[in-house]
Length: 424
Image 1 (cartoon, rainbow, N blue to C red):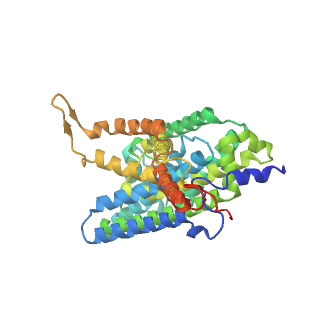
Image 2 (tube, helix red, strand yellow; image 1 turned 30 degrees about the vertical axis):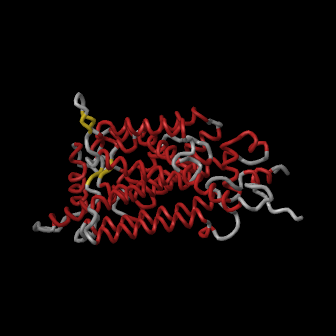
């Protein structure tokens, strides 16, 4: 490794989202403020829900929003910090949802089938049970045969592992082929989008083994917890989503605050120079691409039991484009920016498309926000790109920079000088 390598670490040791390098990670101001805010919002929502002041549907919306924040955090690592504009990361999110959805459908259906067959004169055989389960799940696509994809659907630990490992394996293979060939820039973005489109088109087919366009439904009914009301389950998932986001934020802050994060930012800004300094650029790209894909799989596994359904439309390329828009609006290259962007856009989307925003009567035309929400989102993206490239996270930077300037304003002999007072 070249002797110039440490200069890269020094150059990128600061900056937005990097934070100080000394002291415990959890005590860093940005991390501590984020964790306190997340805990306060989660506890507050819990108390409001228990008091009946917010609905179960809204609690689920909050839980789903936290999962989307986790996906946006992963996208910020791969795009905002490394400069890889992946237009396929939401596919990993959907794969995680399909993995946990398979267990939810299988276990719930198995319970119903066993209850029905137990009323017969003879005990059912394993083959009869499997055929009945196949008919119940795949009858909607005209089949009763259980596909090979569902071989381990009855095992929760295996499906949970699949929710993390399958996205990671796909990202590892794809990234190894792409980065090894030094595909970068817009070509890599198109390649990720094409792969996502191919996956979604395959899932739309009835013979894919995942019920085609129907997707997997009824996921809000958790096997073994049928007696637990949805109001309680929604709170459990809210806390699980908050815990996953908190751990992911800590992990992300740890990655970007050290040498690894410095190299990622170096790759984003000048890949050729980082390569010249002796760093294996492809290894760093592959590592962050794979890790973020696994994070998206975890987010999807938590999201879809709250949504209740997952279908191929969730994996369509447009979903990954939305993910990039959230990060851009929040401010890429800032961990808190990605979270802010995803939260704001997700909650605004629920409000505008869920009937919360009143229609605007213009006399000659009525603006219905369910139809105009995407136009508003696109306009917001354009305005942020043109006039506020740092996104909403830039507002946090502006506030902290002003506080820092005010704190140091009287340290110099001249008004406003930002240097230590000189000796007489």
